[in-house]
Amino acid sequence: MDRLNIRSFAEWDFPFNRPLIISGPCGVESEEQIHEVASGLAKLNVHLLRGGIWKPRTRPGSFQGIGSEGLKWLKDAGNINHLPVMVEVANPKHVEEALKAKIDVLWIGARTTVNPFLVQEIADSLAGVDIPVMIKNPINPELELWIGAIERINKTGIRQIAAIHRGFSTFEKTKYRNVPNWQIPIELKRRFPNLPLICDPSHICGTRNLIGSVAQTALDLNYDGLMIESHAHPEMALSDAEQQLTPDALGEILNRLVVRSAVIEDVIFINRLEELRDRIDNLDEEILNKISQRMEIAREIGKYKKENNITILQVERWNEILRTRLKFGLDHELTREFILKMYELVHDESILQQTSMMNTEDPEMKKAALDSIEGKEQ
Ligand code: PEP
Ligand code: MN
Image (cartoon, helix red, strand yellow):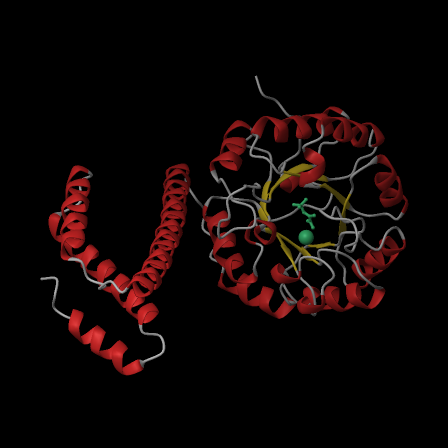
């Protein structure tokens, strides 16, 4: 039986109403930077100020975080703006420094959650301390590893725990920096209904323009809060520049969000819809990719035909294409009309691309060639 001994959001030391909004920069960069963004956020409905002090970066040589001296700047910025503050800890040394600086909430990053040794060390360093800890999902889509990290922290006596969903790493390129795989956090919520669940659309999206819609999906799925990165001058940010929002832009997103009280059937329906839409998005990308590769080959053929003085349109070839594609399409539940229309379009474009290759130097010739192919394939 899965069991966690935790408090609900309403019973935390500083109780949160749903949805909890966490914001702040990816990394604390300077005293001025954290004060500027914090004062912007204080004007919004933000409850918790985040700021990375030690940044887990993929490659050495990039900004690794400002280090311990930033803890005081963050805490001061929080005090001035009446916001509790939150940092990422990745080892017991970080925990010690953060506790010394009176940081209010800790979070464990995705690259730490994957490592049970490190999570256990962090848990041990928290023995006897009563501080809220939020645990991001591991970078790989493995629910048990996420649960394992939550249990390790819980077993040490921490009872104010939340999970943060920040998406999962994939080899294939998608529109997301980290694909959401909504079914994983939903399963977590099903198994641990009183565990607060927060979505981090910034690290899921990787770009500013998707953040609003992912945040809305999370709320529609009944998440308890959002963690969204912000920076007064995102273009100058030393890490995650593309995904940080100005406080004004964040304010606009927050104003547009609709908070519904979801019932479970809605949650399952929205999750399924979202999953299906993601699959369509990926397939469309694949289709366009393949068509563009097809056109590249058409241009190559055009060049080759030119070098060998061969005409573009070879009727037998076109008949062969139509015959085989029609059969394949009909076998795969596509209609005759659709395949014919689609191939006409593809073929016309293909001939255009070949023609442009063959007559690149002479626009008159090119036009004549284009005119001559018109209407040929009825
Ligand atoms: C972060 O929140 O800035 C961060 C490093 O996140 P993650 O662990 O999700 O990559
Ligand atoms: Mn970041």
